[in-house]
Length: 424
Image (cartoon, rainbow, N blue to C red; front, top):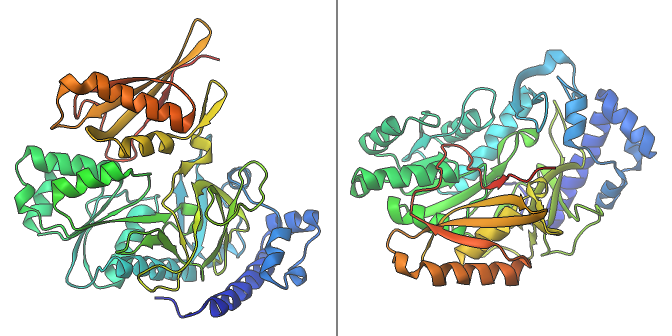
C-alpha cells in the first residue's frame, strides 16, 4: 500500500514526480521537447502542482504519429518489453517499458489485489487476453506478487473455464463484465452454481451496469465484484480499484496525476461533476504521459472513503467521450441507457441500441432483454416505462422493445451495444 498517510505528503510526492517527469521527458524525447518548446514551457517552470496546466496535452493521435515507438524517452537499450492496444484507425498503439516500469506496474497491480482482499490462500482464474495486450500479463504478475495461485487460462473456451473453476476451487475470477455474465449464465445452464467457490470477481475493460453486477453475483454466489481500471498507455490494468465499500475507485495518485476536464473546453470541472480523465505519470520511464487525454468519462469523489484509505477516488467509468453518438441533435452516451435500465425492475442488464434513418429522419430502437422471471404479458407497460424514463433523463424518445432473455449477442470480450445503421 502507499507510503503516504496525508494529503500534504501525497502532494509533496506528486510535485517531486511531476518535476522529474517533465525533466525526463524533455531530455529524453524529441516529441516532448518540441511540444514543450512550442508551448513555451521548460522543466524549470514547474514549481508547483498548479503548473501542470501550463503543459500541453498529449493524445492518441500523437501515439499514432509517433509509431512504432511513440513518446519514447529512454534509449532503446533500456526498453525490455512492449505492449500494444488497438488503435481507432490504422496501426496499433505500441508502448515501450523499462525494467522499472515493469516492476512498478507489478507493484501497483499487487495493490489492487490487496485492496480486493486477495492473498496467498486464493486461486485466481485469469480469463483475459495474453500476448501483446497488457491484460493477462498484468493480472498474472500482480497475482504472483501477492502470493496467490494464478490460473492463466485467457478468454474463451467455456468448457475449460467451467471445468477449472469447479475442479480447482477457484476463489477469484478476473475478466471483462461481458465474460463474467457469459460464464455466470453458462454455470446456470449446466447446473453448476452450487459447486462454485468464487468469493470475488474482478472486472476490467468495459463499463458494467448495476443490473449486470447483480445478475453476475446472483448466478455465481460471489460476495464481491470489484472494478479495476487502467489502459496500455498507463502501464495497463491496475491503475485503480474499488474497495469493499464499493464507493468509487481508489486510484494510485502517487503514480499519476488525474485531472477531470470538460472534453470540449478542456477546463477543469467542479469536483463531483462528470468530465474526461486526463492523466500525467509521475514515475514512468519508457513512455511517460503528460496530460494524456484518455477519453474516459468519470467524476472525482470528494472526501475520504469509509474504508479509511488515504487514496483519492473517482467514480466508476461512465464510458468514453468518443463512444458518444448523436441522435436528433442530442449527445448520448451508452452509459446513460444502462443507467436507466439499472433502475428498472423486470429487465436484464443486456441491451442494444439500433440507429436507423427512415424518410430522412433518425430513428432509435432500444432492445432490452426481459428478466428471466418476468412475465411477457407485462412487456408493453415495461417498455413504455423505459421509454418515459429515457425521455425524461436523456431528452429523446426511442422505440423500446422487450426481447427474450439471452437473445441478444454475448461476448467473451467487450460487448457491442450501439449499432449505427444510418447512412451519411
